[in-house]
Length: 255
Image 1 (cartoon, rainbow, N blue to C red):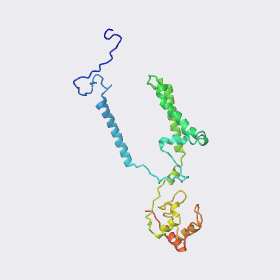
Image 2: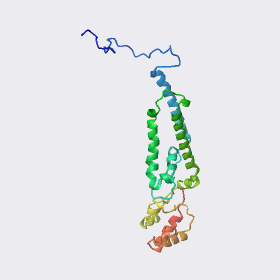
Image 3: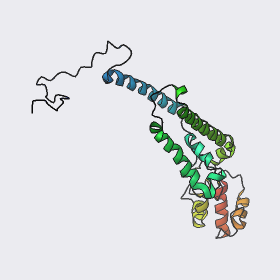
Image 4: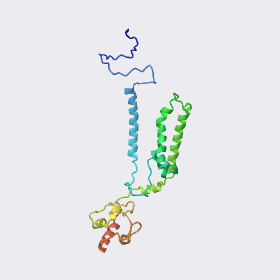
């Protein structure tokens, strides 16, 4: 067989004995069209990223995120609201065809089809055209998805009871409680803390005992006869202990 017959030489695997410095190629012949990835292009990306990072940090310092009270899983009356980028899914689960017995459709099937189509987009639209006018199907599905997300987000935000949500999520200021006092020990002994909380700021089934505005006599009456969700006979103690507990609760005030 002659040398080279039936074979193609596609490269040379030999390594040069003289190591050349890693100098970016000269792209001066193509001004404005291409440039070296390192350091030219990457430096620009880092600069833009740094500007946005500093901007976000300034916004975070100037406008801290509004915190609500500690989450209480037993509070079934609380109106939940996810972050803005999940509002469209939250709204979708309100419709009859995507909630209740069809909850799996709204939580898995519909979002799965939408995100699955997004993953398959590079395979479904393989044309070389870049103009939106020449890619009607891809552009049409994109506009349909944007319109659907925008509409569902707007519907969720427009029909949410913001005032009720603000009141339910408000942080209740605590009080300077002397937990070694006789009044606090009596509340602990009679199970008051299990409902009203260790800081007496209330919970899912009991109101706050801070700044109630009630007199010791009114508090004594509630402790014996109950009120609202609190049944009668919760307090088990002497009249002297009842007076001590009532004076303690009546004197609680916010910091």
